[in-house]
Length: 224
Picture (cartoon, rainbow, N blue to C red):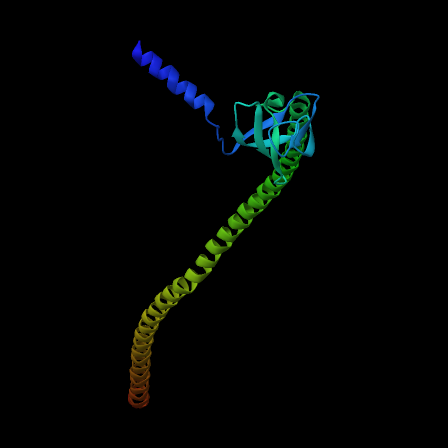
């Protein structure tokens, strides 16, 4: 019981003290025109008149029914607490909502435009990609052809080397054949020379023998 009484006393003291709220905001409530005064009471000078929806920064709240506020332009003064609300009025909310909606629509429009541009860019990139693939394929084929052409001299060199070896072998064989032909030709010439010499000798012998044979035969006929 004593603890509850102490708590109530503490709460009462807190309510009696001025309340300081930094960076808190309130708004002038619906369909009103109120005054901002230099002090807490109607006897103080009017600094400004405020219409519904005006945003106010709360500097100090009191139990006298007045709140010290600051306008967005820096003007400070006192207004009646009962005319303040924690949220903007419905008209302001609607205006802000419409503004946000318009902004969202504009952003959506920009996004759709960007999406269209991106689709066009994608189409161009796809076309370029296809073209590059085709060029890459052509380049690969040309590179393969160039590699074949580059390898051809080595193949030709190898073929020329083989041809030279074949030529040397054929030249060697031809030289041997020529030598053999020359030997055969020499043998043939010697054979014909020997044959001719033999025929000549035989002819000479026959030329010497036949006259003697005829002479002896005549002598035999004369003896009868």
